[in-house]
Length: 192
Length: 104
Image (cartoon, rainbow over all chains, first blue to last red; front, side, top):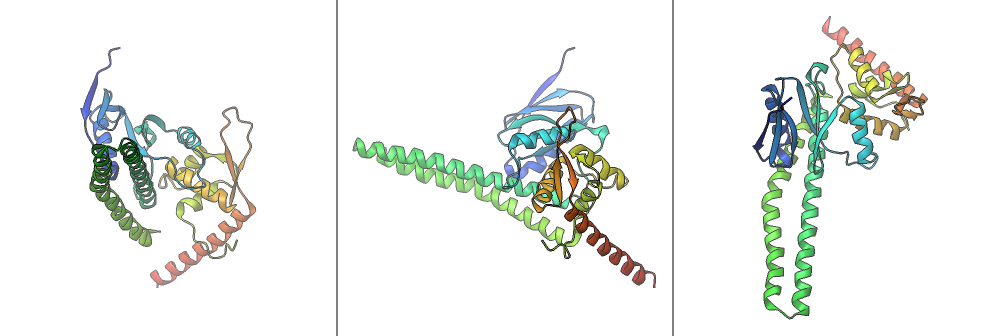
């Protein structure tokens, strides 16, 4: 049987994972089942409208959580199918006929997800910062050993550029996630 | 650990309750949904977090099972049971006071 596929370019920041999830479910409702993504290109396969529902997840980041693999295994044992993984993101799917992933009054699970995303955003930021720091240090070391002014300037350029651009990208993401967390924490004070 | 002042979330209350008999993750999800008449649906991710915390507190235990699928099962501990009993008394108090005041 011939499968019909389509690719859609779309970008969602870490702070927009709930919008991304909604979009995947809208696509599924209109008959396009999510297959995979690399963070920019989303591939869909034509199917029956509304057959599947999707949910995005991240591995547990707390100390008592067991390994990633164990978490993935648990998710599949509980009736979810891991459709695709992109970096730390896990895309889960289940049959719409089996009911929703969770109760719709889900303040605590949402808080938990936003908290995981917050941890993930911090992790990505730290990783990028250390990569750029290493590049800057290597350039600096080369500049000293070759006594090259050009390389010396480049090392400062890389360090300064990296800090500026990472701050511009990550400060809004991290502060939006924190705002979301604050709202949910207040809600939990009323509901639980 | 002092368990006399613990207020359980609805999800944890039901998880402990259904673990009066050993169940694996999927079993817990099905049983809690069934007990609550389909009202309480716990996602796998939330359940995983709850199970890890409850094991850490010593309120539930993973048990070996000879199931071919090697899925881990969990069961409540005596400490978990006493947490449930204290919680049940608290819930009764809530209901009693609610009924007394609203039906006055």
